[in-house]
Image (cartoon, rainbow, N blue to C red; front, side):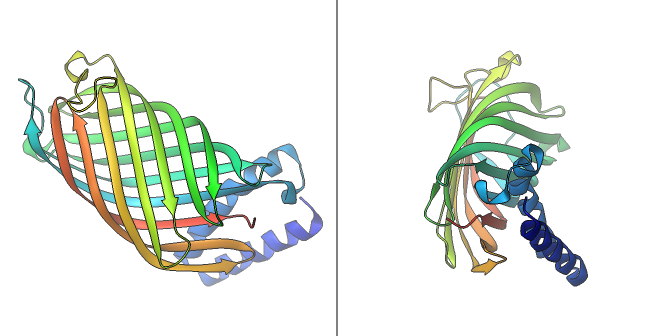
Length: 249
């Protein structure tokens, strides 16, 4: 990083702490995700480009069709966060990494539920100033005490975010292959090539602004959620808050 970059980053951090603004702190987290590779390899910050986005989500799902003889949960409620980043020296294509976690309950039987995913291998493409299309693969741990067998899965996820104004489209789809947990294998009725399926599409209403040269947006979103696991189709709603930041192109 050049002396000017260090000074700009320092001023940004000082103003963020002085304001005590939670949104500013979230932006600082995303900024750190974009800057980390440049600092690690001691390259000039201007050589690195990318984008980062963060979601806080609350998802409620209800079983709408049971296609198996098993006894899967009828409801699933999860709350958590998703943090994604695209970084690289190319202005359009970069390395994508993501970490998602959520905790909740299956309600029936009060089974504690968890869903933790790390996607360390991926590629991302920037679309316009703030849009992103990303593909990632990695590892997932998902289960619910007493109601859904614990399992380790190998997921592949595609995510899309478009729109740099007040309205932003959010979408993702994930197919997972179960390792172990025989009762959960072949649990996605709609697809034969994977064991589980998870998808979401929604709209975020908020604002877009320029801050320290980074195109940034934030706002609340609502969407439709869909999941197939253990032979059951689930449908429901997701609500949350999202934040995105990118380097200038």
